[in-house]
Length: 311
Image (cartoon, rainbow, N blue to C red):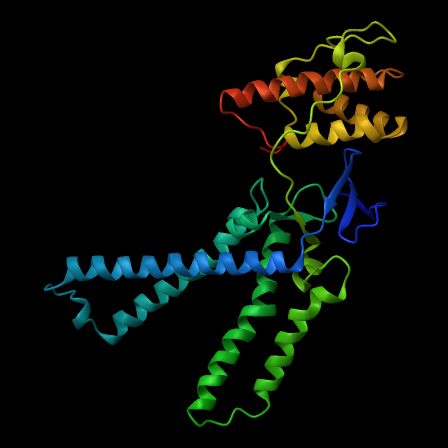
């Protein structure tokens, strides 16, 4: 995504993205509470999974190793420390792998984000990069989890009678600073989003928009009323795009000026290897829309869905 602008409708969370393909794509910024709720769901899922896994391992080890020379109750301190290190590495891989694998996927969202209907997106490029996802997730720990863990440790030390001095107030200020950071910018970005060049947006519903009114080449089986040319697209050309691009194309056919349609026409022609020509852009796009929609709906009847061009 290359450029963003505030929507003219006046909604404070509405934005318009101009993609590298020249499409004007309306998006809605995710509410801050939705982001917090998604994070809590993700943390609950991770902790529940780790707890269940640890209990399962203990149960298996107790049954398999009990009464042998590797009896868990008779292990040396060195062996227990080694197993603790292995468990810590496992937790590290699960914690970061959970976020990285899901957010680098075509949906750009973890299970928690999908439940509340939001996803992450790049603010300055067409697709999320591994570097951006890694950066925002590493900074999340620095912003939230490290100070929380440190405060819990300091609380336990204070309850045991140890003097912790001003360290508790410093960590509280650190935590409060990053916690309130999204409230001091219009896009609700946290520090990790600023560094990684990402933002969190509402995820559009995965369903086709209402049928475009039958008109022009869409109603004439791909034949242009202006030039008489019949546009007939093959399977390979129609397989390039999915439901998301279909909805965007429909909105542009309804509302966009000729200049924007020319840019979209040139982009689609370049993608599918079509000789673009000039002067008949609307008929081309109407025919492409009608045939793409027919293909997607036909695939859906057989249980196949193509959410977007990346899937």
